[in-house]
Length: 220
Image (cartoon, rainbow, N blue to C red; front, top):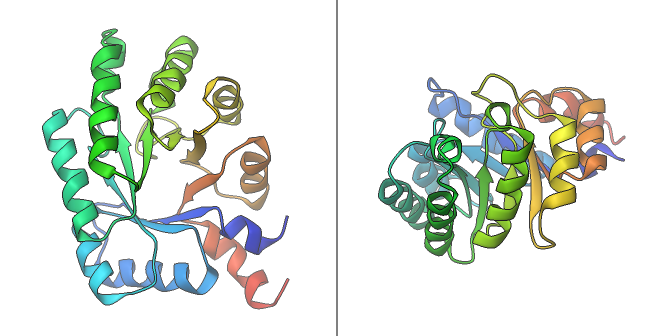
């Protein structure tokens, strides 16, 4: 697998609370130069990036990172992000609802947010580090039924990030129209290849460009 092929599956990400405009601009310039799948940035930066840096596929997050915002707030976040220029939305599901067995609420919320996204891509972050295997499997079915485009492992802000076993589990239980995004703790080239080979179509990381850009610049 070439570095260019890997970078084409990367959501080049910067979601730190302290992210500055200079850091976001550098992230976006790197994404353009190395042709990553998207940039994943805080909602407050979507409109400035859309206005000032053309040609980017902009991804942003809603209900992030804890997921327990009320559904109406998440729907509004999604609508405003898309109006501001976002093409992809990574939402955090309500883990508390899952733990309380309120799967109908989780399904309805994802459906409403997908409706707000329209033809734009919706990725559902289920925060695997807090779920049992049974809950993960249940969420594969719910994400599929809700019509979301991706199931995503993690925010990167939880107690653990992506695990290969979760990607393998997703692959067995998601529907044919749902893709997989791994995020959190994917930091080496071997990690990147491992997750892609296991079935991840996207990887959210802040380190892939730095890791691979030297070889890309050299033409390898």
